[in-house]
Image 1 (cartoon, rainbow, N blue to C red):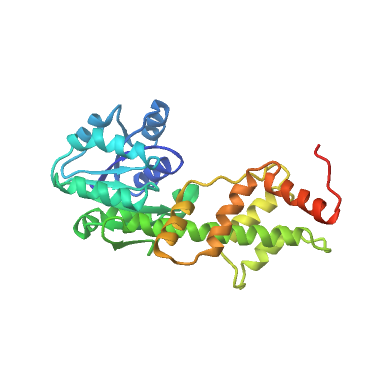
Image 2 (cartoon, rainbow, N blue to C red):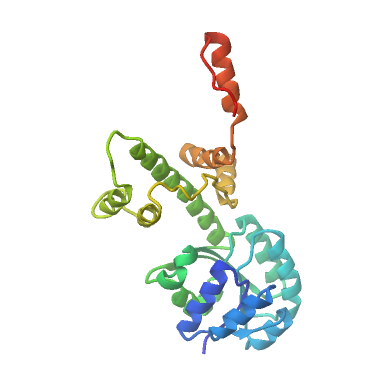
Length: 300
């Protein structure tokens, strides 16, 4: 039986474990929160109290999948995990790590004879039922060995080996940059529709556009669902966070001197969403008053 160790049982890690178990993949799992270990065990996984127990539960050559936040948490997990592993084992990072970190980690593990695969993972909370799109970078031999796991996680034609170490996380980084732009385009278009002179059913319009329209997409399906649930989005504050990949995409564009104005503005609009009252907008109003005598609105 194919088996996998999973470290990290958050929104995606838990659902990935459940999807694998449902497809006859043996899963051993660890998370820092004991409650999540009990929860995944209830779905049929082997819950492990710590990383040594996780490694001991796996049959060599082992495969361990990290589904934890990017940056220091990954390095900390690898520092504990690596001495427990042996040559021929495979470590997979399925989080949103920076691709240059993945290149560095792959080189360090290769020195110990351990394979490292960086896997850009897209699918969000819907991955449990719809599957995950997987972009895999690293050793082709290791990829082929782990392929049954990728096939179980992904929908048909939903996974591929995309290149050498770092390529999986690089392609996912650009994927997320594009996602920012698409989301901003939908957001601006639907705001204009909301302000039109017509009494439009925005959820119905979103559904309509998903049948033959050139702008049809899964994001548009999600737009329709959100607007059906809350037509005016009255229950949601217009505060939009970002998890880093959009910034990394733009830094890469600057480094390579590739123009990406739509992606830049999409990220900047997220910054604007976090301001209750922009100082820049205040200054613009003040300048119009200074040079043209234009009226300004008093602060509340």
